Every structure is written in structure tokens, then in C-alpha cells.
Image 1 (cartoon, rainbow, N blue to C red):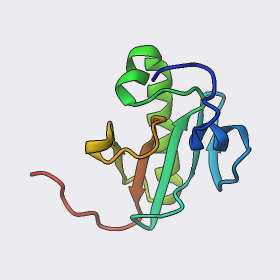
Image 2: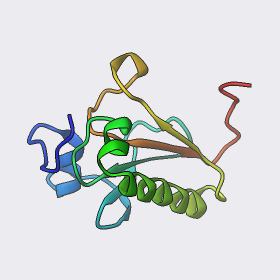
Image 3: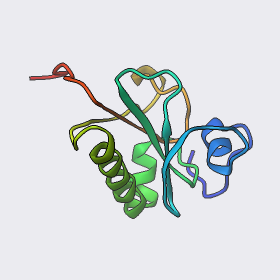
Length: 118
């Protein structure tokens, strides 16, 4: 789903609005970055747009400038927390592992990450 309004039952919309607490590490007008509560690496930050979009493809179609800003914030966070070396992951759909249907990028780093593909 792509909307500009917050979804009342969306966890990430509630984090963006401040209704659900999170450890915010970066914020712009269009993007919020916060620590993952179940980290998979020493640095595991989620970066979300402030507008509700279901997945990365929907965000790219509706607001490519916001997607570019999201990637820029991911790079900024990784620069501050992981010497600029990071893995950026978007899960799109339940079979790909997406569990919250508000587009979000996982920014992983802070250790040697194994190769996913050759």
C-alpha cells in the first residue's frame, strides 16, 4: 500500500510519530533512522520514510527522491557507526522476510559480514 498519511496500525508510522518509543539515530524531514530492537549485527539500524509506503518498489515509484534520501541517511549512519562500510537490505513481501509493511532499509555493519552472493 502506498499512502502519504500514516497508517494507524503501522508500527513504523507510530515510531515516526513518536507514539512508540525507539532509539532514533538520525532524522530528516522525510526519513527516520532508529536502532533495530533485535539486531543481526553490531550495527543494525532501520531507516524508514516518514510517509507510509508498503515496500521499496512502491516508494521508488511514488517518491524516488525520498528513496535517494533514505539511502543517503543509511550511508551517513554507517559512516558514523561502521567506518562507512555497510550492507543495505530491503525485504519486499512476506516470502522475502518482510514483517512490517512500511518500507524500511536494514543497515548492517560493524563487523565482517559474510558474502550473500558471489
